[in-house]
Image (cartoon, rainbow, N blue to C red):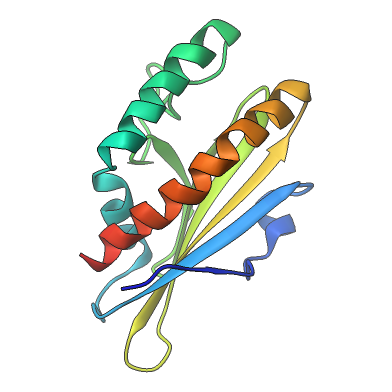
Length: 157
């Protein structure tokens, strides 16, 4: 199955008012019983090794800056998808993400049923707060544009 970049259809202001960055990628899958949670779980269940290595490097670099290395807060059990806390959920949409001092981040997984196949869309929404957030976003964007399509391909596996 092919991953395509599309214009984000999600209501960005409702998800993260004032966001400066958004993008969306979609894939069609044959699984007619797929819901948003299962799609998100499939996306986050296994990352490519190169993406895991980049995440480890990112965590090493940002820890001294006081940035979060995962969405989990110590001692606060939460509903998680991979490293991201679930913000809201319906059968057709799961929103995960967190707020940090440098930026707020959301990943939205939508599942629709166009015709005989299901379409899964991953929309990323980011609101930066300061120069660190803007710098961080500009540094990770090239990797983000590779990682999200790679993760979406796992939904079709």
